[in-house]
Amino acid sequence: MNLNNEVYTMAFQVKNNIHWVGKQDWELREFHGSEYSTHRGSSYNSYLIREEKVALIDTVWAPYAEEFVANLAKEIDLDKIDYIIANHGEIDHSGALPALMARIPDTPIYCTENGVKSLKGHYHQDWNFKVVKTGDSLDLGNGKQLVFVEMPMLHWPDSMATYMTSDAVLFSNDAFGQHYASAQMFNDQCDQNELYEECIKYYANILTPFSPLVTRKIEEVLSLKLPIDMIATSHGIIWRDNPTQIVEQYLKWADNYQENQITLIYDTMWNGTRMMADAIAAGIRAVDPDVVIKLFNLSNTDKNDVLTHVFKSKAILVGSPTINNVMLPHVAALLEDMEGLRFRNKTAAAFGTHGWSGGAVARIAKRLGEAGFKVINEGITAEWRPTDDALASATEFGRRFAAALATPEAEATGGCSCAQNGKMRCKTCSWIYDPAIGDANQGVAAGTAWADVPDSFLCPTCFMGKSDFVPA
Image (cartoon, rainbow, N blue to C red; front, side, top):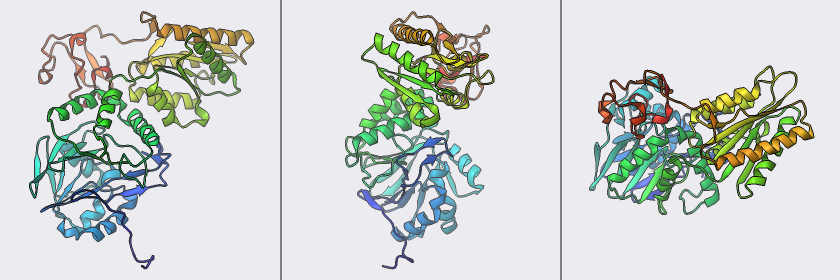
């Protein structure tokens, strides 16, 4: 075989007439720009279904577009593709569409209404779009259909899943996936510890803000009582052995998840803040010897790994020395990420050191409150390099922090009450809930105070949950 002229494809059978035709990206180490670390690479999963009609579900990331189209052409005459399904318009899933559509320009692309907006926004092409909604179907022949399920904000407004009848395969797109390159593409074949680590990291860093939607959408899908023999994701492995195990795990993660863990996160200039972190950890251990304690220096630790531990923790402490009256940039950046991820059901406190003047600890405490954490007291500071007395105070602070976790009535700073007029604003899109109007579409009658609005309430504009609202 001529190595210079042949294009290799690693296509394999998923089930019956379904084949994987995607791309393994073993070298990928950063994703979404540099916002997500991919220590174990990733995959861009595309699926070719050959029944009486031929459908292609999703493509691959743009850098691999030409390779993808060449490989696909080795699998099938491109002109025989009847339908293209775009479950999600983001470029890691749709990046090969321009190259593919240049070859088969009239092939219809099935996607949500927001999918059209996304794909036009990325590629500025008016392809043959076919808008679908939940419950719409597409006949493949041989007694099989594709049924579409809109999944807005899991994790983009345009997202949807596609279910194949008879074969009982759910093409779930980003949901239930993970950034994980593996030669063993089924969940029963790969390292289970690695798989779990990548799944929880994926949920913690990408899907956490949409947990209320995760619960609602999963319950909606389960209510359809569809048999699911396989879940074919858009990244990482395919779930074929007890595929609903990951569905059950998502329901747990979406339900204000926490483990018996306390995580201390800090940056330090001359090790003073690190010394405080060690002392606080010792105090926590003295009160609760069973709790898992993790310490991370942000200057030498991957931020997505840290955020995964925040997701797992019941409480965190964040520390920084003061420079120019503010915190160090690594700490500020992490707090910004945490506010966007909207962690729930977690307690926090701040600590740090300063020389001539302080400021960082108060700012950290404020930002933690804004991010939705229950902040215990105003935090603890030490001047210069902590003395033995200062470290003893930090140890006592750790003891009191651990004790407060077992005291529900512990006083916390911050918190969110309703505005005087009762109106609440969505932090994501600024939509205003007015109790005088309510929301008839969600069964919330006019005159319903915010406290009485059901926890299942979603912003009608961006679909964020009730916890995303602040006083208007």
